[in-house]
Length: 612
Image 1 (cartoon, helix red, strand yellow):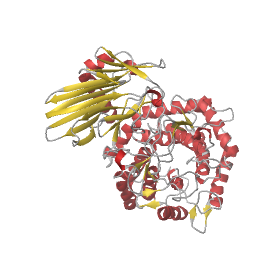
Image 2 (tube, rainbow, N blue to C red):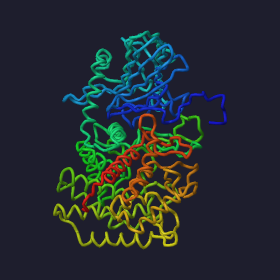
Image 3 (cartoon, helix red, strand yellow):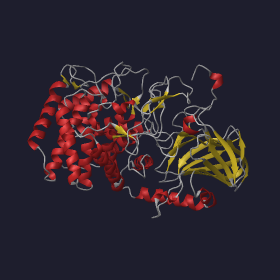
């Protein structure tokens, strides 16, 4: 940002200067300046409609902003909901902007409500002038459109014949070079309402916006009240759960990793990936977190989605690393030239990692199947056949090199975390087969599980540095080793594990931040230095708590909570300077937070969990 100070307005918001709204179809980010500056439509993995977050010039935004440049801004969610309230305050007036995507808890079909954004502006006190501008840029700012006046609003008609979009309002709207705009000279008690979306029924939402708002608030409150978590971190755990719910698909049951793409993980603007997909790896964490909080319905929907992937996988049991929300292959990676952004480095959509080999996904899959069997429903006959096929695939391939959890783009290698999760695959399959008396080649599976156990202890233990290491024969530490006690591979107080935990604390830690592997290394063959990986910090806090070092773990956890944004949302990474990096908000961070909060509560309450 330092190169052209005169071009950058003083108020460029940090990436996390935003809240998220959603309806389980798509989502949007609303900035502290009252602008929706990132939104994909009609689905969370569709092309962008607004992307000013990535490219202020070309991306498009829908802003409702006070003309007074000095307004003080506060942003909050209405309690226990995903309805976002942005408040603008000046000496002359106080204005409230409510942003939501309507959802209903009525027994009627979910698609009874159109897929849209509702924005309600009210003047609470005094007077204020606000400027409204809705400037969509369809298809990643690649498709042109025209704007026409229609009854009560403006229609945006795409040149390529794709479905048009409407903005309806209870105040007059004008057009200005394909954008819709209005000026609101508000006095106390004035209210304006805007509905942007497609399909029938938009006019009803504009007319009945008060009851739609009330219905949406009721929906979220009812959903929140189903959480069984009563621990000391209730606010942050519930906010994490509400965020995960917005990242899930009503139609398919999948959960995406983040609603965004193209937000750099390094401060020089490099490492920009697309996270609007569903990773099989996140499945186990998601199912665990949802079951832990009492959301069995969501866990079940995700398990059904996973079962379909398992059924569709190749005849020899191999799964893809990631999928689109609807279960088809993730988009191929391609560079976007239409959105360039202020920082150098290409913006990509799609993800090359879809073609990688990542052997750890099978452990995630089996762990989620096992958990769901324990707390949900028993696996079906056909489901078990697909599971068996996948386990047999791991038996045949666990020794192979792969790209691993960090999706290395510079070649495959034998990786500790992948090997560990191969062990989890066999371990959970065996536990399940025995618990449910299911048919399986048990002798072969037991033999393989024990071989992997021995292999990890012999090949991945470095006796010189007294730590488990990323690859055999190396001295490279890797924060994904923090999963070892969490998946019950090793006792949380095993001397080898304690030594590894201490090594990670020495080498990969900057205060509460944990880096994925040696900082500034050329290990992954990518440019730029990334930040601390937030999920790893929560894993670290949980590992400390499990090792009996509860106060240490709690301090790491509490320090990490301070890196959340003003609404309790987390990005993927945090720079040592404290700024949010990477896609935002990030499901994996919130999942790791829920798990660590759960463990800390147990330890702090002195609950002894019997060994199972």
